[in-house]
Length: 201
Length: 201
DNA sequence: AGTTCAGTGATGCGT
DNA sequence: ACGCATCGCTGAACT
Image 1 (spheres, chains in turn purple, brown, green, blue):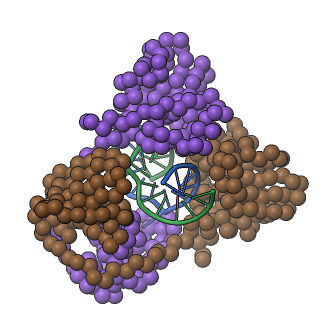
Image 2 (spheres, each protein chain N blue to C red):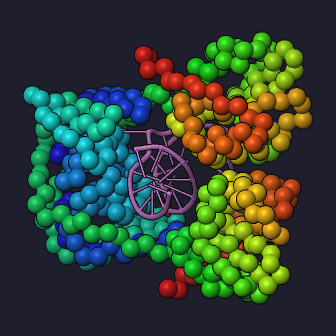
Image 3 (spheres, each protein chain N blue to C red):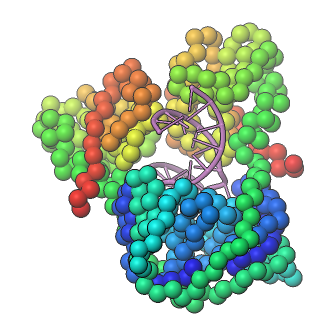
């Protein structure tokens, strides 16, 4: 629907969208999107599962503690979508793909004989992406990032290392790493290894 | 536009969206959105700044190293948007709002006489949300989160504290905090203070 | 229902 | 450009 309207939101935050001409999309699952003439993200929205009611020229969408109110002033165009697919998209080159690739080539990457490897190994500070134990009983704590690793990734490894009471070595594996992150690593017992996505799949 | 199509993306990742009936939105800034019948997020998209070309029944959008290809099979409905506002949305209850509130009430919150306070104080590991210096020359390093603080917020404070060579005290101020984060705080010289948003504005 | 984490995150701001 | 932090992040998986 293309219309002139005002949008008010109250919930996790509060927002006010002043009168203008916007595109409003309502999906069968209760999702509402209000799009302006630019940007990928909607100006306002309501997520799936909302209950929609109409009061005169107001469209009200409520969901848990969130309320979206659209005051409709003039409808420019209305279109009802009869055929609308609900297919999922297939995505590759995710962190998971990279992790599988690293796992399969772990001995070559670490240049050690590995006797055990665990994915998402739980610690009290969160799960370690890959924990590899080598033949000398050194624990390799590996954090994987699908794109450039930043300083927060270093802190993650740091926290995980503090949970391991064995001989240990920290690793960040990513296609690239920020300068600050490298500086931080140099002050800690953590290593960075460049890994690339398998794009030929 | 409502149409039957197939969408292929190659860039930061790769994706394939199988033939189906979807809603395609093209914005004046080059943004493209492909929406399925559910979810708030688009199935595929291209961000602002892309160049669009048409080759027979294929719509190709290129931007830096990203290429989105839409193979159009059948157009069910086409609508050209003539009046489309580019207004911005006003949002309140953001982190910035919370920071201002904390800044105004800093002495009451810290229970100290404060002689100097800085916002976004720069360090080599990033900017400190609020740095308050009290009458005893203790540096209070304050990290603010608008909602539940997680363990990464603790690491942030930890990194910032390592940049201060004075008597110092670390703080996280947020409406709530995760269990893991509290565990981490207890092992460090960092405090958590519950603060709430001013919702009456 | 809460919690945690990845994401083609996007977006904005600083250097 | 890169680096960094926020977001009503969303969505998904697990508890």
